[in-house]
Image (cartoon, rainbow, N blue to C red; front, side, top):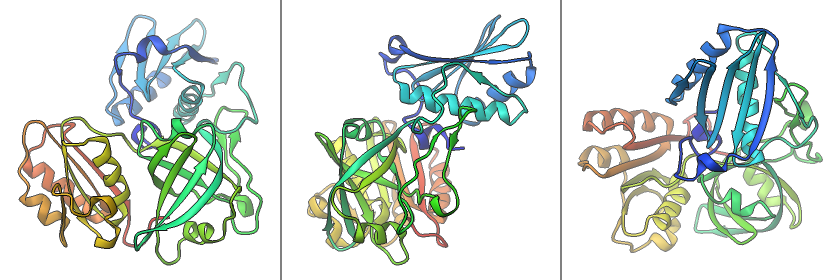
Length: 344
């Protein structure tokens, strides 16, 4: 199961969220069980989320929603409060999975079996264009564009296999998403939203050999329907940003530079032809060795480091940042690809 940062913007109050939880779901477990509370607390701990406990039960805030577990006689009740239906569905699926891991079944009320999976938007291809030396930009339009372009840097594309009509994931009887399998299985790569304007989003696709996404982008026709889930992957951190990334992280770094004007620097290992608007920016440096640049960097109290590259480099970056003594919450490190598995 994805972590909160991978699914949607991480939980926590933003000053207005608490009184905007006007969407809800309820479910029940037919027997009281300490296993339910223990499972929820264990998952919250793994995601570094605080748990509020009271005489009637406990509550966890995640992804901008509140998940409550309330003891009854007999049984237990689960309540979800969220600002939008999408978050209700995502948290409901998470709760179903957490309980299933300890052998408990949740009976949800008013479950829309057969509805599109939570967070899934069906969008139309408006155009495909080459940008720089190594990127294709895919423009998609639809009423969910504004939602998909805020609160998270990335979205997941859902692409059918060549020659197949798309079969979309839908809510199953348990509350969990049922994904198509076999010949209908979807390719599900994650990409950066390079831009969002009006009813459109632009997805940056790094071009490389043996990429199902690149092959699909080369043949897709305008007007085709694409499934998009998200947003996820975290948003723009606070403080002074120091961004480090390889070619695959370039679209995210370019977006972060626009979101944090005047308070961000970037160190990139990439083809200079792909820099675009970042070319000539005095806050941007091109290097052959990201980790060496990170070692040479010295942190300040208000600094936040954002690092994204290949998985082994990301592990090295975490060790370097630990040696730098950064406080909890002062860094974001992501593995965008692995040496044996290219992105997309």
